[in-house]
Image (cartoon, rainbow, N blue to C red; front, side, top):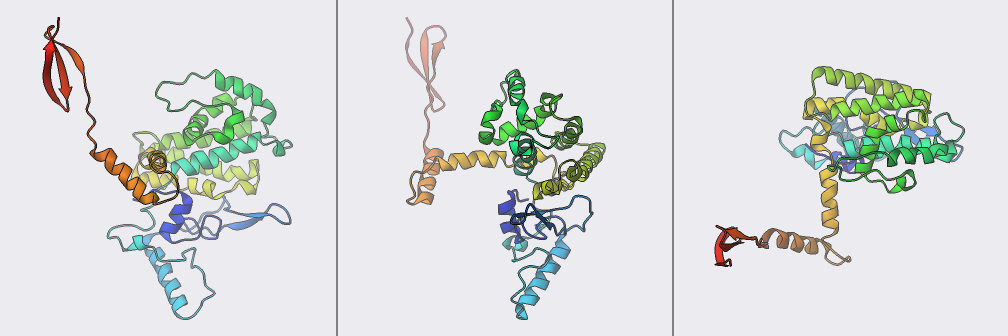
Length: 326
């Protein structure tokens, strides 16, 4: 399997970026242009249509079609159903170029859908919409500060004023707590709508997921996607929202979402970032730091009473008696 965020996945799979036509890695939805105003537009993915799925067979067929068109001198052709270049990964034996890519729970759900909707609720530009709750920020902060987090939480949730600095772990906590925290603040139709999304993703993150769980989650996600443009508008039918509709299929193929999330990889990105300074020979600096970390033997010393009379010194796993204890 390959786990990557959307920009990286597009490059690895050899298809259009998420802001282009036929850019979904798992189906043949084309998408369409949504005009924000006379000058600005964005690419959206309608949520009320069913589209043909991609598979290894039609992917390679479209790739061959692209090759033939370019070979015959059709230089104006940039892609065939979103496929714009042959991926080296297709040469790997037993690797499925479509279903070998897994759903990215961290970027798609937490840093994508959850963050987009939350920022929309709080953005003063939306003060005329029924989902606007920016004027309730003080009350939301009070409720956040009343939350008691277990020691296992790597981060605690900061106040709304720091929302632009929230990390993925904080968005995860917010997703779990948002429904009870916003009860009585966010209008009920919007709260129920978001609750469907939270419930569906929570089910897909369980350790043990039954067929009934998958069916429940699939129904909730379909409801969430279909109702979204009616509650908000079509501009919110983003690439991330569309990808969520494929999350259940990914769980059927690869197991719960947490098993291949990018949390652990993002953590080691921080480790790598701290392994070099400046811009000179960055790769060599990182390699040296990793070699040192792997090969330097850290001596752990422990002193304690042995038989009530002697001190025991443990050096690299070997016990040595140092002296008599008086």
